[in-house]
Length: 192
Image (cartoon, rainbow, N blue to C red; front, side):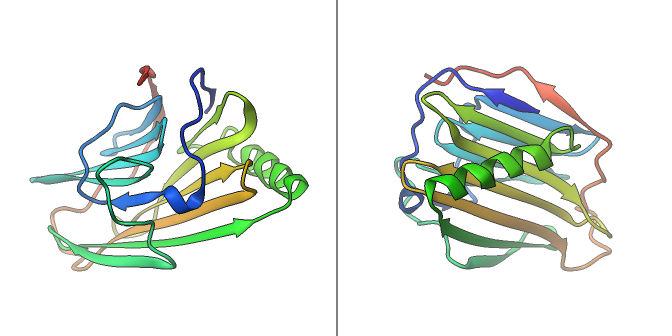
């Protein structure tokens, strides 16, 4: 589902994005949770978080945002981490610089591709409808979970893309997430 947000756009460039797996959940401007699946997709005023709940373990919170106090820049080209519960976290990132026309075409195509797609959430910020954050979650085999995100910064001609893959290091692990059924919209909150 696509949202048109009613507050100022806070992100300014790809270089200001930070990454964390241990930041607390932040107020979301738009959120969606796949029904029957312990994941929440969250669009922030400062980019995104994905919260993955794991049986008997702390939530995994991927934060890619301009957040004070988070020092780690967005890893390029990515990072891999072993997690509790027999899971492995893999993140890949790309930043592309585009002309204004190419960025508009890329964002239009992205929103068209995500429209009506199960597991998709997107939002545009006021002042420039091409200032967009979008997320798409999907599952794989044996409890694998994947999500992709896109952050468009038209004022700098940048599109940041991330791909996250959570996989079982040991397929017999009880921490395996269940497959999602559908997406349930949550009521947005105002984080001003």
